[in-house]
Image 1 (tube, rainbow, N blue to C red):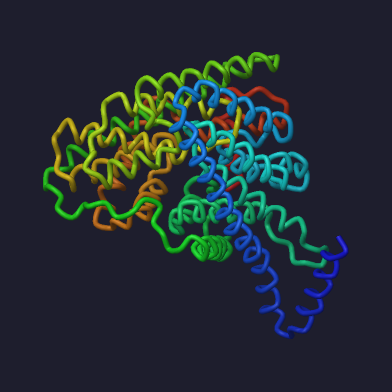
Image 2 (cartoon, rainbow, N blue to C red):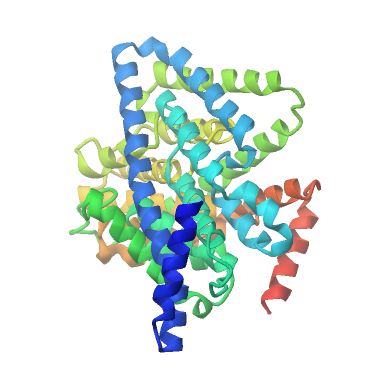
Length: 466
């Protein structure tokens, strides 16, 4: 604490020496975002390497002793769930709904509630619990957790500001953190910006555009400084596309959009059912059963369904083994639903992208498409499935675009996202994240959520924004 006080004192003396008041104010307001962005980039890089190390450990264990999956997966499910239950109950799952709830609750009266959603403890629990999920081979990703981690970093930096410091909006700080986290996780700066605007808030971007852009750029540059200017996936071949691909794109958008929304609905049904569990042993039984189901699917059908799904995306996009069997997306979706509802830490972004990629590759095989046309269908399937889960078509399109650097197919990707967003409403009007956000808010308020509550909250938001 003495070190922090000395740093604050030196900062105050340094800024007191600046005569231009407007320049001083701008620097004071920008500095917390810069510092938080650097920390976010560093943590995102470290987390990425730890997660990859856990995935490699899982692959090594299962390659040596395939039968061990029947013990490893349930055991890691239980350990991951116990860590969350014991140390930070609101660290479970993806982390994006928690950030959305924190943004809505970010005011002085609810500071204690926000602390349960974003804190230093959340960061530690998020990383440790998700590593056990990855070690077990769970079908989960690190991108959603990175967003909650980044939101926690930015909020904590904001809390550490001294009393004399100019006030900075807590909501804007959290939103910028979430965008920076996504940018650092995927190496997609535009995706981070669009995600903040499309998913996290309906506030006009002019109110926080400078902070948002700065946070995304600095966090992304920090991550690139350690990992290099890499693409999340690579450069698929979409150079010689057929002129009649629009019907195929529409078809994959409809199927993948419905599948993404259907998987989300399944997750919500399981989550609602699990809320009736009153005793710990009931959760343990679910984890053992869920772990054994995924283990059986992997052992007896296809080990490729395990993990985040990045290997599936790379296989269908960059090898000659482009066409997946029809059961692959079904197994991937089933495993993802079980993993997500386990109560441990794990995101749905990467599994959703891989599920969409497998749907696109199945259809490409049925239609006997060329390499370029197959790659386009796979990319559109990724956008459509992610849109079905998140209902953010532009974020999904920009993310896939930046992951692959294939600008010539942007209109196909946006079309797939928009079609998927429309058809997914047939299954549910709201996204998975919307439902979970209101669930977290009501849990913090000790109320039971209903469909009516969601509509009322939406109306309240619109009135406040207006």
